[in-house]
Amino acid sequence: EFTANQIAAGEVVERPVSVVKELVENSLDAGATKIVIELLQGGLSCIKVVDNGCGMTPEDAHLCFQRHATSKINQSADLNSIYTLGFRGEALPSIASVTRVALTTRHHEQLEGIQISVEAGKLKEASTIGCPVGTTIEVQDLFFNTPARRKYLKTQAAETGQVSDLLSRMALARPDVKFELRLSGKTVFHSPGNDSIKDAAACVFGYENVKSMLEVDYKGEYLTVRGLISKPLLTRASRQYQSFFINKRYVKSGLVASVLQQVYQTQIPSGRFPIAVLHIDLDPTQVDVNVHPTKMEVRLAREKELAEELQRALSEPLSLPTA
Ligand code: ADP
Ligand code: MG
Image 1 (tube, helix red, strand yellow):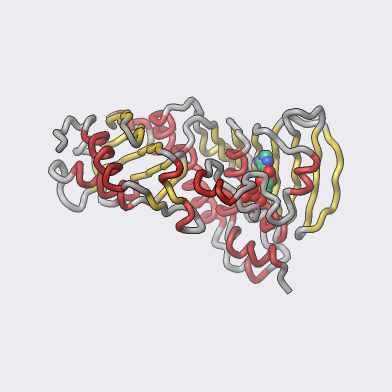
Image 2: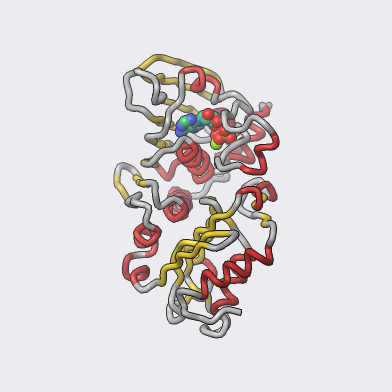
């Protein structure tokens, strides 16, 4: 018999990568500037996320495993201008319902921390502990109590690949944050966190590929755009090498993709796509992130004006004339 949390877990936590995503987003929401992610056996036996964010008070640490106990939104009006990545208060209770979790956290205003262990959603132990400010969450034995779900997990290598892709995307989304991924004790990915999109992109795509890319740095009436686009000579056969971030959130945007293609259309053969990492910042009330539960699809207001400005922003580094 499934609890509400276990049912929600089916949506929030499908596999290791979804657990990592929720935990890392919480670390970002907590203002962390350094996040270390460690996996054992592709995350099937252990996923550990260590951050240097604001930490939780002992009260919050107990509350965070309860459903809808989010600290992030108090009024529904806020939904139109959310800057935080999480706001439903479902991730931790869902994860905790299908795993063994150890939470160690110290709030930045407290002298000591607290350690709490939860198994299948039930509190096992809680004690005070000396630890640095920030939060460490260790999730063990994913789906240990729901073997039917465990069956659907892929091989360790496949799960690990998905986590690496996620981390690459996050490093591009937040060049101001240091990310480190460790697999069975070995560091396989490391971003500098120096707020340079170019340096973050070099970690992801390799320095040689990034070196020749053109920088976009545009401030307009409705939006600012920063990032990298490839020279027309350096294109790819798929859109896989394009990442768009709106207000620091990774998004799928048909609008951005088509403006990008338009700008290049006279420069590259059809069927080829530029490489691009684009950070677009705009008034959060003009972005509807609630179109899809995974928050990847966005709806934008004032599409026409945005498209025009974006076209100008992208044409500039290519020295193309604009309408
Ligand atoms: P949400 O992110 O939607 O608020 P979660 O279930 O992901 O819900 O987290 C519940 C709450 O636990 C958060 O609102 C936050 O108060 C707290 N929390 C979770 N992870 C962290 C973290 N790494 N640092 C500080 N607080 C955290
Ligand atoms: Mg969350």
